[in-house]
Image (cartoon, rainbow, N blue to C red; front, side, top):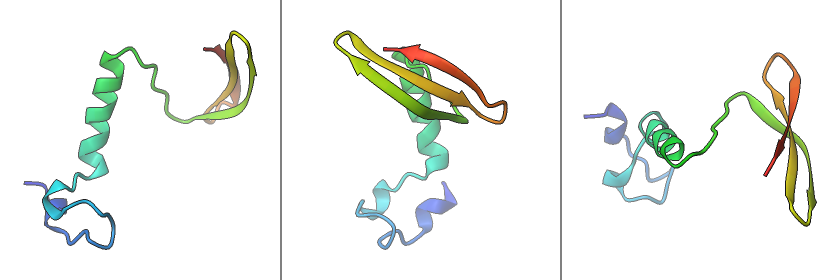
Length: 74
């Protein structure tokens, strides 16, 4: 049993008490599911700009401490 589930979470969330799921358990579930569905999940990455045209969006990403940027088209 997760000790966090014993906390009184009424002040933290409107979820019913026994539905509480801490980030440490929820995030791995979400990450696994997103990757199974083809998502490209990136940490330490910031969206620093984007433009949109009739065919999609071009996003400029900056990666963590290295400060390198990358253009992504979607």
